[in-house]
Length: 158
Image (cartoon, rainbow, N blue to C red):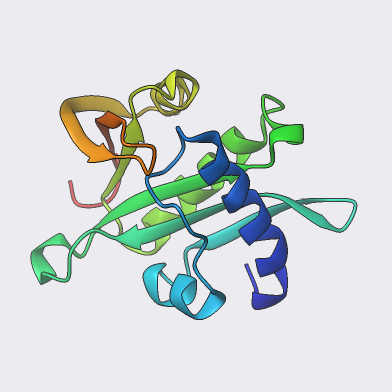
């Protein structure tokens, strides 16, 4: 992912925000903020006809050295291109590349109402480790549960 991709990335992110089940975030960050949050070598886009149709990133889960090999997954696909296997391709690439970066555990906090995303992560080898009940409040006032999921590398940190 390059800065030139960010207009598409932010548009797809906004569509996720608008869905009210993809993220608790209610404002797309500017590129500078996005750049600070995500691991520099762990950002990818899926393109079709020279346009970004999906993106994937990893973010550190902690600044503590002991958790240096744990990263949080974010994958967003443009609504017009969902259910076509693009997310799965991005996830497969993300898993392979994360191991090259020394990441041994991938985590995902999925709003439990987003049943398609929970199923997607399960299909990609993640397991449910718990439900955080009423952990976040949407800007609408609705409290949401989050399904906490993880995927442990079979080659790194074993």
